[in-house]
Image (cartoon, rainbow, N blue to C red):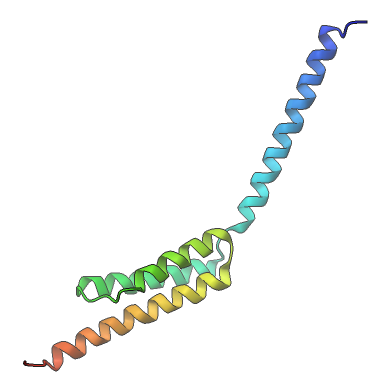
Length: 110
């Protein structure tokens, strides 16, 4: 006995709905890895400090690398690492600004 057109159509519809539901569930689970408000605030503060250091043209080598790694960690949902790296980037940027001000106030004539 050959399957009728209705049976083929019904099985195609059921298979399609099953696949769509599986994809939708996966998208919901992956969006759970969003950054926390604390991580977003820490990254924003680090980026502001980096802008200040760059405005003086006095930024340390790894400061922007830490900020980038913090953003990557936040995108993956690792909020603790994101906050830690963002705070490290902010501290380096602030230290660079302090160093710039010190160097301008105390010139070393060679």
